[in-house]
Image 1 (cartoon, rainbow, N blue to C red):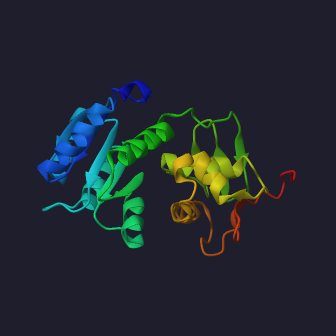
Image 2: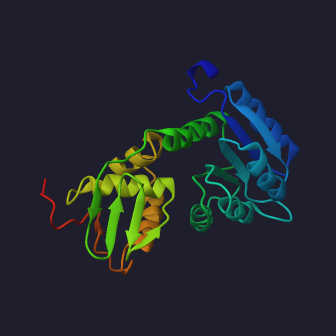
Length: 241
């Protein structure tokens, strides 16, 4: 299987308080060509992120002492390593908490080894792909500026931090000004083909992005919703396509 895995050799940290689950995931990931280390709780996971520098973390939500959400929040204070959360729940609130805390994906137990491997490769492809940069700085108005070369967004003159996925989403919207991009198109460009039907995921990230760049996220003036179709970036000076 590793012959077909372009990310063979990447180091994956698996975090779960159930030894059998760690063995199951580790066996299948190693069969797929990944290198695997493990942690049995959130504190150990934070330490291994700091000292072992994994390429990606697969972490269970339900753990004693410190749950996966809190461990993820603390990991985000020290690292941008991509994280996939594992849970037995499949509720929208849990997904929102996971993504808001900085998760890159969310897989519900029970899952197949193939599904997890596909998700890991999709996330690695997303964070390892070519940088979406240009040489220009785009001045939208007095409130918003986008520096493509530095991958920075300035809101009222202050730098606003964007996660890699948020940046890619903004990039594709801004680079197609006044052009409606369908939800499926954005999902494939930003997350990959595997996510083309995950409209809720796109809605969450649109909300995060609006919260960071809009003057009023409830009445957006930049990222506009085209109901039932997708989204467009409103740039008055742009040439309509």
